[in-house]
Length: 497
Image 1 (cartoon, rainbow, N blue to C red):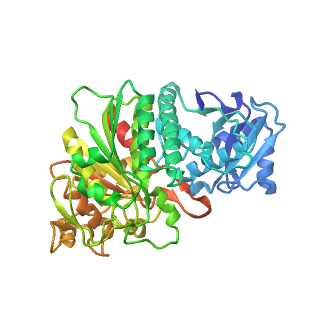
Image 2 (image 1 turned 135 degrees about the vertical axis):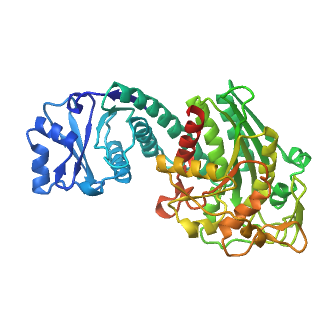
Image 3 (image 1 turned 90 degrees about the vertical axis):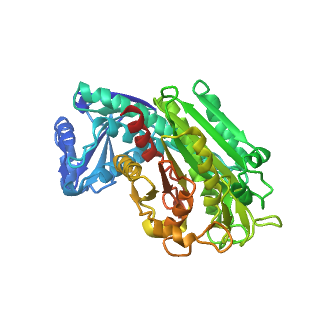
């Protein structure tokens, strides 16, 4: 997508379609200016009820005279007193959906911006590019029928107040375009079925990203024998029931000062999770192909940092395996040893994400990281606690947790901090090993984080449970690319100050 920025009247801008907004029964300032050129045509539509202005409604007007565009797309903004950032994003999504139903190749965007809690020009342009990318994304499905025509939309023009805002908007649009491209990469991996997206497939995807950014990125993919040499017994126990071999992926992006401590991102890469011997219920088990969304997020985040050319050193670690039942599968009651020498009693083989992550977190130590953030579709308990609206954040460093929550708020990719005090770790006591891998039903999302915290001592670390936010179910079943927008804001703030 190409993005242009303008500072003068929207009615003068040339393109194939001008997009303006209307509140319920009232035009905003941009719409009123355009309506004056159209001699009250839009007000007549509002007065007659032919267009209500309800949030998400759209109406395409043709044969308009006096404008730089031959079409006008009206987008409903809803009640003026409830017009906020969420409504603003909804309006843009509705606008892009309507534009993509036409054969329009270029559009001028002149939607109202909310006055309260408003985005600055840079964040507004980044959000527009992110939303446009989401609208343009098509699932890489494997249907054999005739494929629909690809959208023609290739160019968007965004209006801002002045030259200073224009420079910020250009930067934001470029970042948003990179975010959109990396989000598509993430979704492409996550939406594939488990028989295609295997640990070996993820390894190849990481190598492809490294090849695309070879000037400042190095990628290594470790096989079973190499993982065994690293003494990652906890990670390997999850993989031992599957015919598919595991992979441990190490990606290093060197965009910052030489020798500067890197930020380490760690992702759970269970490409299919049956629950192992602790077999899951059959209902919705197909969605367990999304159990590698943390891994896909890490790979996409490294790709995004390179696309944005962020001045930061970044490491991505992915522990990828299938969790399958079988004659060699790990059993409830088995005791395994992690890479740092701690013993773990596996009471539930469906609590496998923490078993692969703990060895990856230990591996992060060798980079002397400035901070470590792991992302995992880890617990159903987090879905019960926060639903599909917020990702869960738990940390051993309050400042790091606050940084992630604030980044999510700025990116409209929200997260919520849950407590992580020592009492929760007491639920992991085992009679036979240093710890158990589960702590009972109570506070399941937190006890999972408490388990991981035992492998992060001495490091600034935060855990993000994205089990509720990483994908949608039902008719809209697909990966969401969350929490990549949050990470974009987090990394940009870290890199650019």
